[in-house]
Image (cartoon, rainbow, N blue to C red; front, side):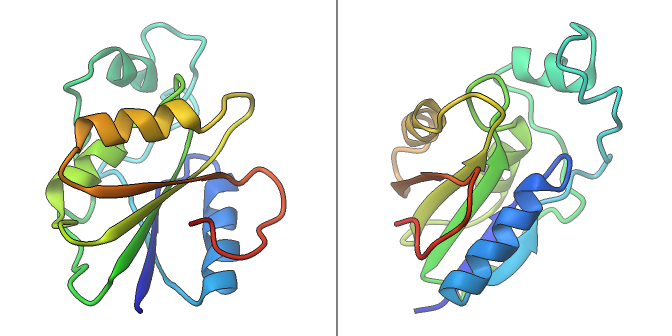
Length: 149
């Protein structure tokens, strides 16, 4: 079974957990990178006009990716990781899911967070993408031990 870890990381924390998980389960790693990198000002969630705040206020926002599509054809299982933003996945994750063919793949979700749980983020993705096999996942704020599915 071939596995891919696809992740978006704003500050490097999620990237570290993605590498740890990949090492634990023997998976390839792919960074989900926005076409326009987020600056510190963009990520200021206390600023109601910051880029991240504006994107998260708009459920239809789909930030462009640096790599429009990713070849996932050789993978049976895809793990998607991200920091929790406003209780859910950042909109760049929606762009990734919508730009790529994930049909027929097992999908695991992992996230990092300063205070939110992962349950709402998983339920939100399952609701938005009912045709995908999103099986759940885990918050990876601590050490990574074994598979999350």
